Image (cartoon, rainbow, N blue to C red; front, side, top):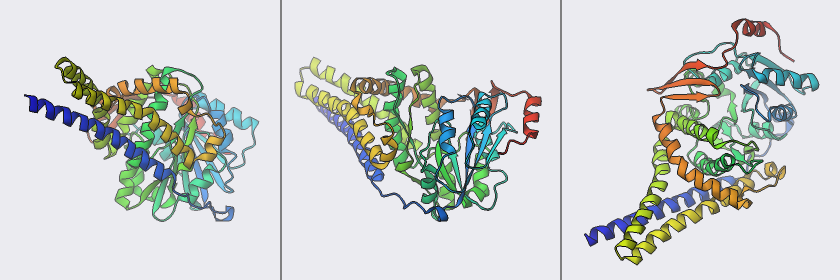
Length: 426
C-alpha cells in the first residue's frame, strides 16, 4: 500500500512538472521563432500586384479604422474586393458611407454574397466569390478580417514573404482590452497560450493570411474551401499535399482592442477549438494537453490533502510545491509571450505601448478563469454537433462535413438580386 502511494505521488509530481516544463519549452520555441529575421521588404518596383479580400457580416466596432488602414497601404499596386453578406447587412451601409467620404487610393469592388451554399460556411463562400475574375497580373492574394487594423506596411510585408516554397504567410492576434471586464481579460490569458500553440503547431490565422498565386490557382484549395467551415485551419492539409509551407511572420501580429463579455467569449473559444478538431492533426496534441493541466492540478490538490490527513508532510510539500510552480509559471509565461510578440512585431506595439502583463490583478483573474473554463470549451469543441457563427447555425457532421441549418440574417431575395446587378466598382 505504502509503495503504491509513493509511486502515485512520484508519478503525479513528475507529470505536473512535465506539463510545466512543456509549456516553458513551447514558449521558448515561440520566443525563438519571433527572433528570426524577416525577409527583406521588396522594393516597390519588385512587388507583385495584389488583391485584398475583406469579407463582412455585421458592424465590427473598428470597421471604419480597418477600411482607412486598408486603403492607405504603402504597396504601389493592389486592389480591394469587399464581399458583404447582404445589402441589408449593417456593414454595407458603413462601407458605402466611408467611401462617400474618402477617395480610395486603389481600385475597390463591393459586392453582396450572391450564393449561399449549404455545404460550406458563408465565410468560405465569400472568399471563393472574392477570388473570382482574378486577373493574371495578380500574384498575391491577402485575406483580412474586419477586426484587424493593418499598419501601412502590412501588405508589403506579407507579399515579401511569399516565394516558391512558402505559399502562405500568416500573422496572429494579441488582445489589449480597453476595459477591466472578466471576459476581456480571460480572452487575453487564453489567447496568449493559443498564440503559442498555433505558431508552434503550424496553425494559420485567417485574420491576416497571404496566399501565393500558384496556390490560388490550384483546384485543391478551392475544392477544400467549397466544403470547409473555415479557411485557415483547413489550409495546412492543402499545403502538405502540395509540398509547400505556411510561415508565421511575427511582424504581421495584429493588436485587437475590443472588449468582450464572458458569456460571449466561451462559445467563441469553443468555436476556435472546433476548427482545429475538424481539420488540423495537432488537435490530437491540443486536446489531451489542454485537459491534462487542470486534471493534474486537481489531482495534486487531492493528493496533498490526503498526504496531510495520513501524516505524510513530505508528500504534501511535494504536491503543493508542484501546484505552486505551475500556477506561478502562468503569469510569468504570459509576460514572456508578450515580450516575444513585441520582439517580432515591435513597430505594431509602438502604436500603443500598454503592456497587459503590467495589469497583474486583471491578468491573474483572467488566468484563473481561463484555466477553469478551458476544459469545458475543449469538451464542447470535441462533442459539438451544431455551431452558431454570427447568426448562422451549422451542423457538424462526420467527414468532417458541415451543413447550414439556419441563417438569422437571410437577406431578402429581391433586394439581393438588385444589389448583385448594380456595379459597385470604384
